[in-house]
Image (tube, rainbow, N blue to C red; front, side, top):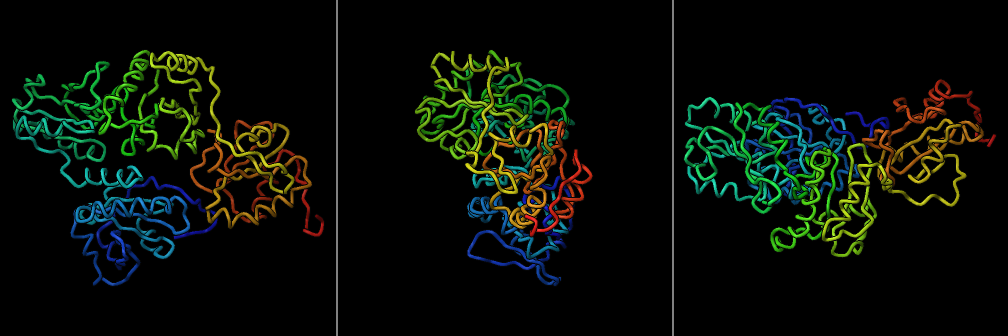
Length: 505
């Protein structure tokens, strides 16, 4: 597997490949861990006894220098311990076992893949926390749809902290049941599904014909919306997915590690406070009901609402919005994340009658709010060959309409970025006498990156030409000094002015 400096530190492969179990005839290293570690081996005698004895395996492909991998590692270890004896969790160091990683089409780290019966079934796209991984993989391990035999089993199934989808059918030969089970196989990684072949099981829920019911979690039942929704159309994977997708979360779901990626696919307003449905459901719903009351006024505005436990998301609140533990006291903190990459915070206190939230939303939809931007402090001195950019100075430096700017987005922990640094500095020195060209860099982990820059990994480099700041061009060339110079000679608005040697500096 190539590990050149042209690669990004984090990049996720969109491909879903199928590989036979022969690709997993590898050596197994049993460290003091519940995670199996695999290495390349060329013997057809060695087999994954622990992994192959299970129908389901989760494999993590990683690199030791990858910051995201290091953050994931303790969560993965805890998940492996919780899933021990149920679902094996495996990891492969791609820097030492390149052959295996090439065979599985791994192009960035961390990459997680799910195997069924020795063959790759899909990429893992669930949560990256221990609890989230455990919940996700337990769903994968069980049947795609749980058969229910009685009303008591139905009551037990829907009494869950997650929404439940239940199909009611007239008998085992029902054509709609067959379609439901096909759909369940495709949807099992996202939703809880069950079915019964006795319509009488659903009598108290008004079932008198074949249908599918969506039961919202009992602890989220509210006077502001229906707790059970009925789907009576012919069942297919696409039709059932559309129905579930439109209704699964309701007006104001509980945002947590298990559903955060699904909820954040659209513009999202979140109220962060002491959400605790186990020890304090009444207090939790006190504030949720006030959010929902206001949410009913904006249901068709394209904004999703949610409540979340502040302590669970404290790191995110500090990193993305600058909220410390003492900010806001016991009152909810309100934020909005847009899919365009903009973030907003409600500066006023959340009033119990909801008027402050309503005013905040009306200002939001009217375009009167200023987005929140996370930024480091600008350096006191910025006279080096590579200009340091922070979010607050991005407009001044990178979007200077009179200058061409080559800007690198980097991460302090990124090995590729560290390898590039001396070359990038040398480039800055060569062009330090050019008044029309700026070589710049920005820590992409400590500053908000403008949404029109697509940065999925580090380092990512863009060229922002003079007079065309709304059309930055991603740099895809080599990472040697001469590669950059050749590119800039072609793209620069004015002829480059180069210093030819270090003695000229």
